[in-house]
Length: 224
Image 1 (cartoon, helix red, strand yellow):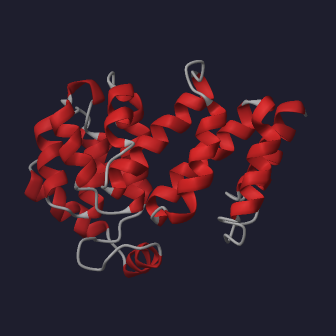
Image 2 (tube, rainbow, N blue to C red; image 1 turned 120 degrees about the horizontal axis):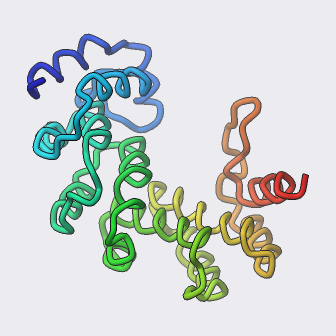
């Protein structure tokens, strides 16, 4: 399929209801079609083969659904550091950032280099990605991290961070409490002190992103 054909198909799948949903979550009206995530995945399955060039062309449209589809068509190992720099800094929406972090930056062979590059960036999407990579490292490979100092950093920087960055900083905070019992109480106390996401609306059956609730719920599941 060509870029033009793909964009036409995505546009045909759009709905005003989904557009409104995206707008409520921070998207603009002008760079989206309003396509459900599941339908984007179906288009990706139809294309089947990962295609870096096609994916990069779709990304450059700056259309939300095209960028989400692009993520599904990329192989992390085929992307250079320079290409990743461009991608992360031209992200258009929170949902795109989350897919990029889940499927690309967190799976890239040089993810530790990316984390170190982006953790001091003044670009909110690069920072969001850096903290996402760090949260994953806290979970799986924290031996070389000073978690106490990291909590100090979160305490100092999270209140002033942009909302897009706070989201993955909060992942790091919660993951420290969930996976590292020696730092659990401090992580809970810090979450209560900061109060970020305390009043976050949560659907029935879902866990609140408020760190103290999230930590306690996940620890409970580990012991049940």
